[in-house]
Length: 454
Ligand code: ATP
Ligand code: MG
Image 1: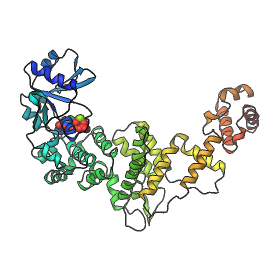
Image 2 (image 1 turned 90 degrees about the horizontal axis):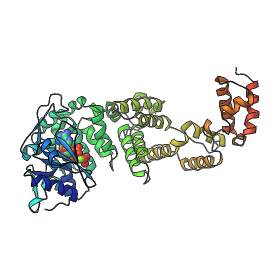
Image 3 (image 1 turned 180 degrees about the vertical axis):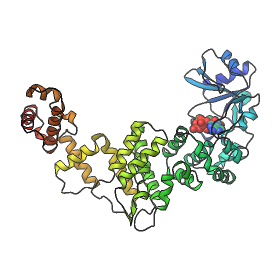
Image 4 (image 1 turned 60 degrees about the vertical axis):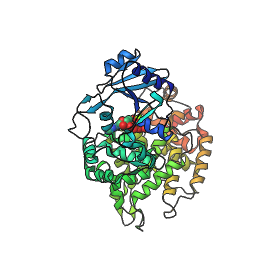
């Protein structure tokens, strides 16, 4: 077998070998190269210790205590790591310390899955080191723990989520003994930090058919530990007819969102849409009452926020997802006036319109033929676009006068009265965009000012 590796990586290996060290590409990049996929990054393992690595490479950086030296070679930053074994695991999440080893075999045996525990050297015509038969598992599309699966998941509970992530993203099956060990140890996922959970879950959510991963998480008992709010949706019927539960509907909506996102969408918007699709009905279990879910969008907003904060997502993402969940229940009637359409745009926010419509479309698709659809979605979209072109006034920033203009014209000092006047002007312009002219607005401002509130 011959693997294609970048010349820079081959150079790094060659230079280590010239100094009588062993050196191999290892882990995920070997797996990906065998699959014919371009690896995200190339990792090299060696028996040289960090100071020896640094003496071989002048342009290198020793950044962490895990024995990894970052080597700049050509256009590549290659992580060169001393063979290591984990010393001790006490809290199921992180090795307490690392111990260097001389043995490639030992280094491979502490890796998570057989397909991630292979090494390859381009030297001597190229050879693969594959003590756990990762190649065969890769060909058979199987995720199998290296060694005793119970032990491996007890050492690091994140491996359970990684198993699901690889299974879901690559479309592989989790080997039965590995799966059973996950079921037995699923409770240990409670020890994982939100950051580490987030990392694997986002990979699942961003995958091509994300429902597969969530169904696996649920069936293996992990979801009940890391997102009990979502697990509960399995017991809540989506409608009066209990044919489909809220969990399956949420997953169908998530898959539809993943499939519907137009190519070229910025990846943050794509992630926000997918998260909103997953959580849009998360308020239903708490509001379930005879097939109705009164105000589930508000309850759901709070729950989505709580989950996303627990997973340590950044504030902007949390807020945008919460906003979409809260607003996903809009209804439209063809007899809406133009000003009703503009009020809708203002409430939702101009920037959120495309992703909110994408969410609603995914929700419709995720409901199949069962739920009452919003047939007029396309019509509302056209009317919204029309208003956006026509009016251009959806926030106070769009007013043709600002607080300074109002203060100057009316001889006012800064204070709440200026804000009240601007708010009133904005309300009027929402109803009648033609009023958005400086002279007209100043005249209106005088009128508003002469009529104090209350
Ligand atoms: P990708 O980078 O495509 O997500 P990967 O397998 O390269 O997948 P990384 O997190 O980059 O994942 O890890 C690199 C390698 O380190 C893995 O292939 C595996 O051999 C090992 N590894 C990573 N995380 C763990 C873990 N929690 N337990 C054991 N080995 C791990
Ligand atoms: Mg990697």
